[in-house]
Image (cartoon, rainbow, N blue to C red; front, side, top):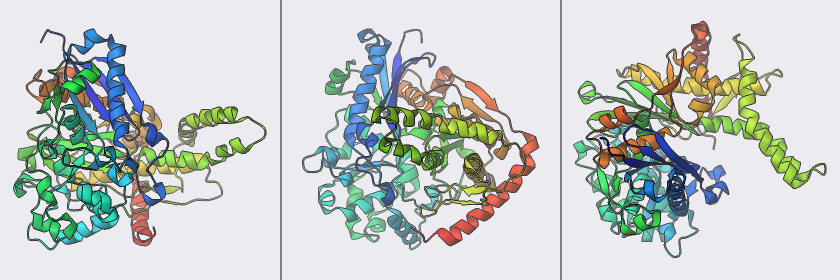
Amino acid sequence: MNETKYVIGIDYGSDSVRSVIVDALNGTEISSSVFYYPRWQKGQYCEPAKNQFRQHPLDYVEGLEHTIKDCIKKAGGEKIAKLIKGIAVDTTGSTPVAVDKTGTPLALTPGFEENPHAMFVLWKDHTAVKEAAQINEHATKFDINYLKYIGGIYSSEWFWAKLLRTLRTDEAVRNACFSWVEHCDWIPFLLTGGTDATEIKRSRCAAGHKALWAEEFDGLPPNEFFSSLDPLLDGFRENLFTETYTSNEPAGIISAEWATRLGLNNDVVIGVGAFDAHMGAVGGQIEPYHLCKIMGTSTCDILVAPNEDINHKMVAGICGQVDGSVIPGTMGLEAGQSAFGDTYAWFKNVISWPLNLLNESSLVDSETAIALKEEIESKIISNLSKAADALGDGDYAELAVDWLNGRRTPDANQELKGSIAGLSLASDAPRIFRALAAATCFGAKSIVDRFIEQGVPVKGIIGIGGVAKKSPYIMQMMADVLEMPIRIHKFEHTCALGAAMFAATAAGIYNTVEEAMQAMGTGFEKTYEPNLAKQELYRNHYERYKALGAFTEQHLKTIH
C-alpha cells in the first residue's frame, strides 16, 4: 500500500469528543482535535444527587462537526480531506437514547428539546438500579439463562434497565419512543444519512455486552421475557434488532449532506461503531490474555482470548463475553471499575471546597479568584501524588474501598457505597489520598483475580487512558499490587487510534483488524515493573481491603 490514505478515528468520552486523522500506512497522527461538550460543562440535565447523568445529542453533533473540520484545517485543508477514506466511531456505553421512527433522538424533535429523558442516558447514570434488580430477579424464572453471557448479573448502567426506567418515568417520551439506540450505533447512522430506525446497523459489541444479544438466543431474548417483566416492554423487541455487526464492517457510505458539511469526498466509508474501551484495546495493541485497562473517569478492562480456549466456559460476575466484540473471530471479555479517576476527582473536590469561598472574599476580585482557584486545582492531584509517595513504604492504617459510584466488577452492584477506615488525627490529605489510590488498585486486582479464578489467565497489563499516561504514582502502585508489569501505550488518543484502525479495515485498506493493528500500532512508551519489596505490604492490605469491602457491602448496602 504505497498510495497515501488517511482515516479518521472519533472517540466520544464522558466530557469531550476527540477526533484524529491518522495515516493508514503507519498509524502516524496527522492532526487531532478535542471538543468539550458545552451543555455537559454547565452541568445541564444532570442531577448527581439522584445519579442522573444525561447528555444532549447536540453536544455530540456539534463535537462531531467541530473536531473533524478542525482536524482537516490543522492537517492542511482540502488536499488532506480528499485523501480520507474511512471514518469509525467509538463511544461510552451503555449510553442509549429514545428515537422516533426516523431514528432521530427525541431531544432533537419538537417538544422534547429540554427533556432529559429524551436525551442520551450516559453510562454512569444509575437511576435504573431498581429496574436492574428486577431484571436479575425476573431472569431466574426462565429455564434459559438469558444473563449467562453478561456475567450473570444485569447492571443499572445497561441498555434494558435504562429503557425500562425511561418508559416508566416519562409518559410523553414513552408514547413518542419507537426504538432505543446506543450512541455508538447512532453516530454512524447519522453520518450515513439514515432515516429509518429499523435499518440502524447495531454493534455486536454494544448488543452483546449490554443488551442481552447472543447467537444462542437467535438475537435478543423473546418478547415474553420482556413483556412479563413489565407490559410497557411488550412488543418493544420488534422495533430493535436481530442482526448485529462487528466493527470491521462498513455501516455505509457518508451521506451527501455530511460529505458537504465536513468537506469530504462522497465515497468515504463509515464503519460500524463500538464502545470506547473495545476500540481502545485494539488501538492499544491488545494481545491474547493481556488485560487492557482503559483508565479514565472509570476503568473498562478488556481481555481477548481464542474462541477455542474459552469454548463453553462462562466467566461469572464480569460485564460480558462476546464473540467479535473486540477483534472479529475472537472472544472479547469485559470488566471494569465504576469509579477510577472519578475517585481522585471526588477527593480533589472535597479538599478544594474552601477555594469556592474565594469569590466571596473581599481580598481578591472575581477574575483573580477564578484564576487562583483553577491554578491550585490543576496541581492538587500531582502534588498529592508526590506527597503520598514521599510517605515511604512502611505500613499504615488508612484503608479505603473504591465503590464511590457502585461496583461494576466483579459482581455488579451499583447500590454499594465507598468507605474509608483507619482514620486518626494524623490522617492528612496525602495519607487519605494514598488509601484511595490503593483502593482503586485493589479494585483492579479483584478483577484480575476473578478472571484467574474462573480459569482465564492474565499474563500482563496494557494501560491506556488519561490516568495511565499522567499518573506515574498510581501506575507504579498498580504494578506493585498486581505483581505484574504494566505497559503504557505511546499514542495520546488510543481509543481514537483504535477507531482509526477499524476505519481502515472497514474501508478495505486492510483485510483484517489484526493487519491494521500491526501496521498502525505505535508501540509503548513506558513499562512499570513491580517492586517486589512491597509485595508483602500490599498482599496484607489487599486482605484488609476485601474484609472492609465485605463489611461495607453488608452494612451500607441499604443506605441511599
